[in-house]
Length: 221
Image (cartoon, rainbow, N blue to C red):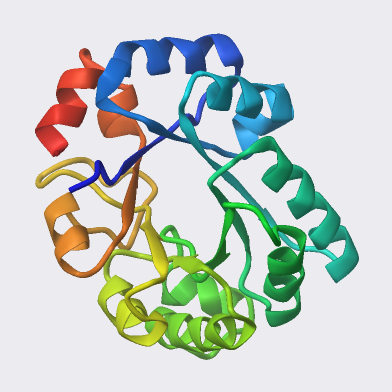
C-alpha cells in the first residue's frame, strides 16, 4: 500500500521546515503546509517542496465569495499541489472545483475541526452534535461534487459510507496509542483511522518533535 502519512509542517519558517523534511528523508513524501508556515513563506515554499518531488497538502481552509475562491484555487492548482482545503459550504466547494478544473489538485471540504466538541459548536450557535454536523456538511459536499473531506477519525467510517470509495478522506487528530492528545479532542490511533476508511493521516508532533523523525514515521507505519 502507499504511505498514508502526511507530515504537518506546523513551524514558523522555511529553515525549520527544511530541517524536518531532511530528517524524514525518504520515509515521508507528503507534507502539509498550513497557515503558520504559509503566512511566513507562502507559495514559493510550496513550489520548493514540489520541485523536490514531494507531494503538498495546502491547508488554508478557503472561505470567501465564490469568484475569489475559484481564482485562488487556480493558483494553488497551477503550482502543482495535490490537496487543498476549503470550508464545507456548497458554494465554496463548487467554486473550488471550478478553479482546479483540468488539474490533479483534489479539493477537500473541512467538516468539524478535531479540536471542537459539542460545547464549541454550541458557542457558535449550532444545536447539532459534532457527528450530526459532519453528516450535514458531507451531504452538502457530495451534492457539490467535492473530491473529499477532512474529518475526525471518529467520524471517518460514516463519512466513507456517505462519500463513497473514490473520495479522499484526510484525518487529523491521529495519535499513537498512549500518546499526548495535545489540543485535539476527537482522536484515534493511526490503525483505527485507517481501518475506519481514512485515505491519509495528518501527523505532526509525534513525528516532527521526535528525536529521530524518520524512525518515528517508520514506527507509525
